[in-house]
Image (cartoon, rainbow, N blue to C red):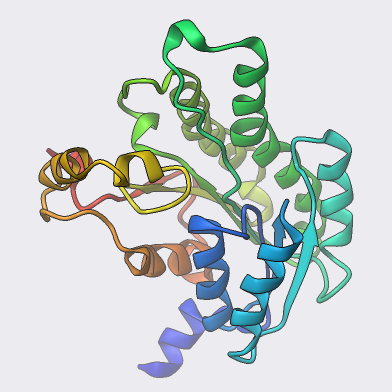
Amino acid sequence: MSALIDDLFSLSGRVALVTGASSGIGRHLAGTFARAGADVVMVGRDQGRLDEAAAAISSEGAGVHVLAADLQNRDAVAATAEASAKPFGAPDILLNAAGVNFREPADDITWESWDATLNINLSVPFFLGRALVPAMREKGGGNIINIASLQSFRAFADGMAYGASKGGVAQLTRAMAEAWSKDGVVTNALVPGFFETALTAPVYADPDKLAHNAGMTAIGRNGEMRDLDGAAVFLASRGAAYVTGQLLAVDGGFTAK
């Protein structure tokens, strides 16, 4: 049985590129992929926080490399794709975890905040993924994981730009799957429920909202980071070779109610 599990779900010998890796879901899942056996390239804007995260992960024996880059800059996307292949070889796993949420009422949204939201949440996953696909083809396949949201399906207050971007991520995931799955590059999305990250800090600062969100789930609690591990490793693994274009909700049953 262990040989079967290793064949399906071990990430040993594979290279994972994780954006948004200096904090939140990106940082946590970079560590998860490393524990599953992958060499990990961590991308984020804050060199100090990247170094701190990488030190914690590498202490477990994983191969870890950091790339400080602001992916809002279009040139940085291409440069990151190129640089990501140098430490361990071309990535065959991409986790698009970088994101922003300005939580603005509709009347306060500016062109600048709208463009920034759609750029990092929607445009970067496509253009970075497209840049990595040729090398994934050469390696015989790959796994791309986008981060969708409860707002891919439902409208939340002060979330118009974020919701539009995450609705786009849902369709982008299906479109990327349609374009590249025939080459062995599968694309899926995680749909997290409520987890404590920098983006959800305003919610976690409000005990009433936090309790309300927990009550909206079928399980009766908000998410803990470890709840994402199984789904993320599955979507990054050979076990997901025939799973593509899907959105996997890890939300305690929020979308089931």
